[in-house]
Image (cartoon, rainbow, N blue to C red; front, side):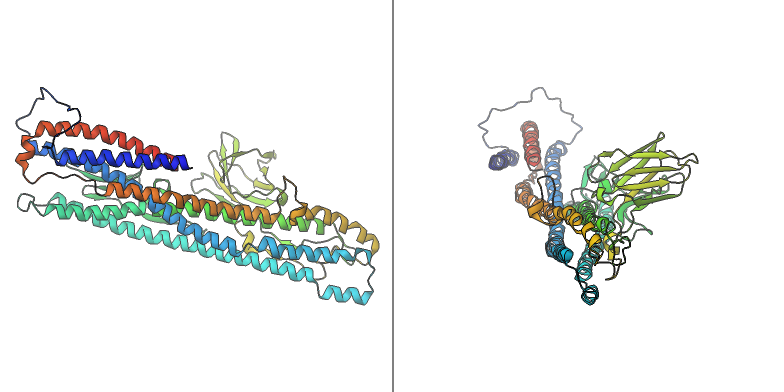
Length: 556
């Protein structure tokens, strides 16, 4: 790390020196140049071309390059700072709820362990009835449920806050697009000949608006001889001289948490989603946090909850209640959700359910039907899942993967896409299913049943609850929770380390613009030298850009 840091600092200093030297050379053309002079001989001059315009182009290209690099870095800083702000909120929530899979879960485990400890004692009927009435197992189970439900509420608050934040920033972006559009028209038709000294103030005002828009959505300015265009990074043109393209928020009637960004394509007369074009900016960071960090958090906590309930329920079902009946589930776990794509060309009946909660993974899935093949992709890491597929004679298909069964009960159309969300309502609908009569499934006043339950139960769940019993390849639920929580903290600190370097780059580029002398004749007389300076400047900036990209790459 120290060597990379030293390399970065050296690169910054080298770039600063080169840009300073180049700026000084252009601003002071009469100063002696100790470096080897680059002469341009036999240059054919067009007498009809205004020399001062040619010289001004040198400065404009130089300044545009510096401005573009500054804006790129500024957008990255805004992206990092926004991510940090949101990650800190998530980190606080994870720290606040760290007791769920630690203290609360251990209390439930210890309570179960304590009551199973009665296995060598035959209780009198009155003792046993009193024991059932004041079931500690039920009480501790309900405490856990309350903590899980409360986690869901606070996670919902973060998701709603992100949606509101995204909406407000889209509104502000449209306000800026309107103002930049108006300013561009004013500049385009400004009477420069009548008021030659007033045009710069209009250009500066527009530049400030463009800087703010860049912070929000990340943009690229492209200037021509008689044109001014603003593009989203690798995306659509939002300002094209007299024309503008406003953005719209995309929401869903079926999913109140969903929000994205798009625009109306007037040529095709339809709405197009462009979330992938908004990156390295405030909005880009908000979308990234919502799409990755919030989703991963919900999936991880839900997976641990599903795994925990599976461990408990699977053994409760193997036990007997006080009436020697087979046991019942202690906890309710909601079924996964299937969301068909709006682009699907058919709407077959679909369903999805858990068939093995012990195999649950902390990810959403995309199922794609193409060329009579089913392709299942994990959204967490974009890996392909190998499913078990069973076809029925009536055309129905049952697809099993990672403990989930997805069924299509009618003819499917090529190209159809489905999203599987295993944990949409897991935290919200998690609850205790049975009363105190059934939570004591593992304890029975019949000694034969006593011997059937406790030893097997304790042997199989201890590994998941106590650190002392965990092996190298088996994490306890708490260890898995803490590992995920630390990954959020590490991501936040990693972003914090990058910001000072990027801010230093902005500082270096901030005041490196070069301008012409007011006396045009002075530039006119030194045109050949200016041509030399321009070529030298291009070479320096090419090297500077390479250094800049390499340093950024080291820290990306």
